[in-house]
Image 1: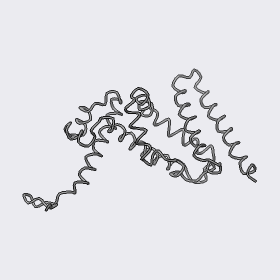
Image 2: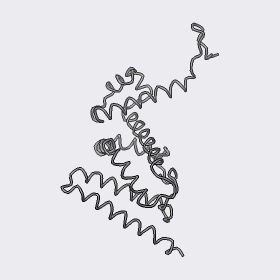
Image 3: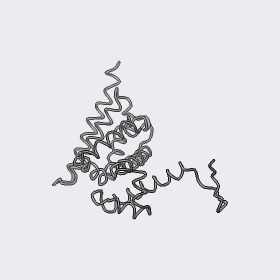
Image 4: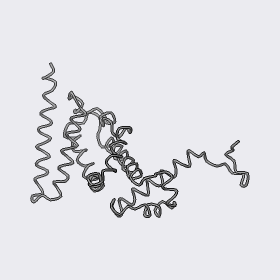
Amino acid sequence: MTSSTSSATGRHRRPQSERRATTRHALINATLRCMKEVGLAKTSITEICSQAGFSRGALLHHFPHKNDLLVASYIEWLEGKLASLQQRIHSTATVREEVVAWRTQMQETLPMTQEFYWALRNDDDLRARFNAALLTHSIGADVSAYLPNTSIDNTATPMLTRYVIACFIRGLCFQELFVRDQSIPDQAFDHFVEILSAFVERLPAAHE
């Protein structure tokens, strides 16, 4: 028979599930700090344990493979960024307002995204674990389900429309790193918004 009260101290112990969740959260937070401070390539198990204040054995008990911890950490980071995007986009936002929100968000998250995507490109195991996680986690579902209804939702396939937006903005963020004329990305952005707005605005008439 187990008890949540320690006979030695008379104090109640937290349930094991709660202690486990707390430890996992601490390890994930330490991993994200390492990724931000020293970069993903230098985020070692030793560095994570030092940041979190746990032993290597404790880390491997919760995350038997380092890539499991990296995936869990990046997904939690993505959840936070999705929540931030939700706050940036208000209901009934115009096409331009929503796309501006996407661009602002992705410009802020580019450094972390760039590092993780590069790691996915070069680590088959990490990519396989990440893709497997996306199949079972809500973060891999249609982002439209988590955002307010906007003009984009007037399209027949809001999910695909937002997928195109994300792909374009991500590419634009990379282009901004090595463009000769800094005004070109802004011009390309405005041109994209004009094209997308025209596409969205013609849809009601097309369905009549």
